[in-house]
Picture 1 (spheres, one colour):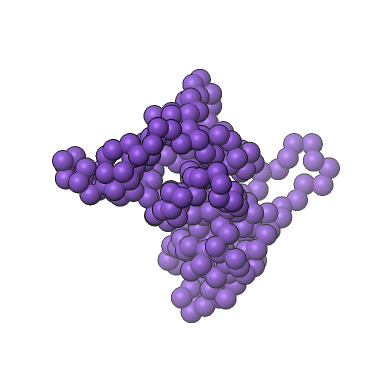
Picture 2 (picture 1 turned 120 degrees about the vertical axis):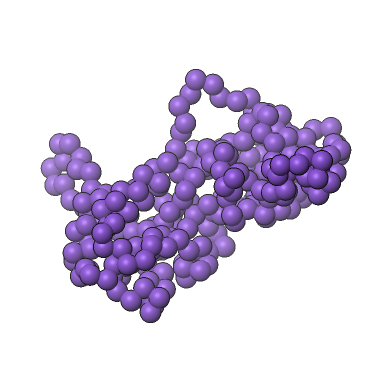
Length: 245
């Protein structure tokens, strides 16, 4: 089973829409250990310290999945009601909190943030916001580890749009990639203020050894440029997607 690696709690890939939109729904059950998803429940139930079962909001039905971004931010402060269990026993009747507090509790592994008396956690930056400071990964991109031209872009596997962009770049650069793509956490990538970035966001490095910078930029454009119909001055801004070093 695949998990989101940078959450302290065990958050399986199956929750990618909930994570992308910051919207957990009735019936969602989350555990503080991956052992909960092992083959033997009798063993798992002995090592699970806490788990959470969401009671509200109700599941959306007949509605197409919505991409994160602004939806994530608007859901951050919306109400969530849940039951918290310790050693498989419910510890209080019902906790009324926010989606952002629940997300943060899963991220940092601290259930105290569910308490509305504690300051509301700050909304983390998503992959779109990271674009504005992609220049800060230059030192890592130009390090001997890669040794040539490198295209870098924010990558969030929870986001359908981000996955599609990433797939397009991989497809276009496939025959030129020296090693990769390489996905580094914001901290590993040298991104400025890495602690403000959502735990699903990485920096993807696409190193090539047989292309000049201008040639690499042309291939990235071929992968990502979608002309707008009727645009008077159609152009491609590399900075809207990432950076080449």
